[in-house]
Length: 431
Image 1 (cartoon, rainbow, N blue to C red):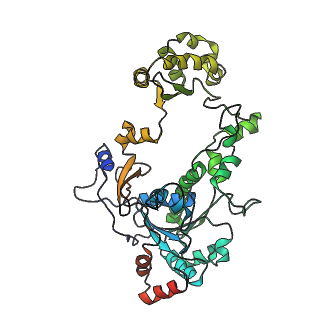
Image 2 (image 1 turned 180 degrees about the vertical axis):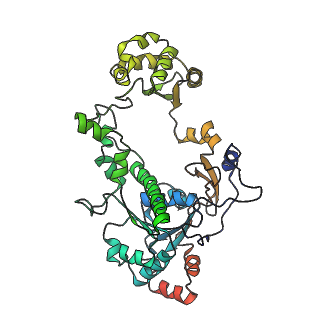
Image 3 (image 1 turned 135 degrees about the vertical axis):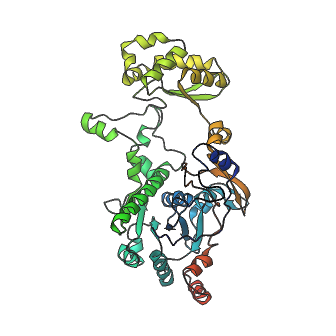
């Protein structure tokens, strides 16, 4: 990695209240008093050329752990996520999450000036993340041959719906299509209902995490070889991976998993159940020992002695009986009573939270999973914290998504351009 690339705009460095609580837990606060640990990805520069949503989220994850992420947006067509979903005072809230820990540069890559600036940036960067249709960078004379010539150590992550080749490669691709094509929608929903798509960017998010992992794998290879490489990330593939053994089931047995609603074909009881006070709880019994504890708890130990109870598939075949036993018991008790009884029995249960519950949940509070950030446009805002905890080099949310192009002059000045050159680029429509 380019250890000299440590620049970036100033931002709030002190932990937010949730972070402070989390950092007091074992495994945190291990640096010397008064010293700030070097971020895990400090010295790494990432150019985020992508939009909606997998590519930008991958860059966000890298920025959360210290990478200097420069978001490159079209001067006249900002990232559409700035306008997706609800806004407050005209400020898009989704962007505040997706654009956090990023500096914002405007650049029209289709212009000669924009191309030249990007090549100069590429020469001083470690990673570029893009999600244009295959052939778009090449059309702008910014293909891998030009980028790698500018910087042989560069890693280029290309995130598209269907990958860089194949019969679908040039189709418009979105996460919704991956959720459908992968088989996810086909197994989601009630048995007698239609296939169900998730009401959020599931495939994009999974592809984003996969892309961040792919970037780190490519950088690890670069440590050994000194050479960068191209990552071809098709959003339809990580989605297929998380569906587990379905391909091998079909290959070896011809088995096609049906829709089963909240039930599982592999174990029971496994469902959501309503409590006496109108709340919903999820119960899982993937482990045989847990299934036995649940049946003792709800007053039906006789099922444990049934031959079919000894396997998950056997229990799943008797899901109606088990759901009646578990659901009937839960329906006679309030949520707090049920959770306490399950906890004492060492059985697995969790409330079905909506976002209001998530924001108040004591486990999320203990982990610091929601963090508070001071924002110049909106004041104090809360959002998800970084993905995981590192004991020596923890990540941090230093700032939320910033205004379109607000760091353009700073980034270009760091690159060595003077005021006249920046003005010429602006006059030529490149900025």
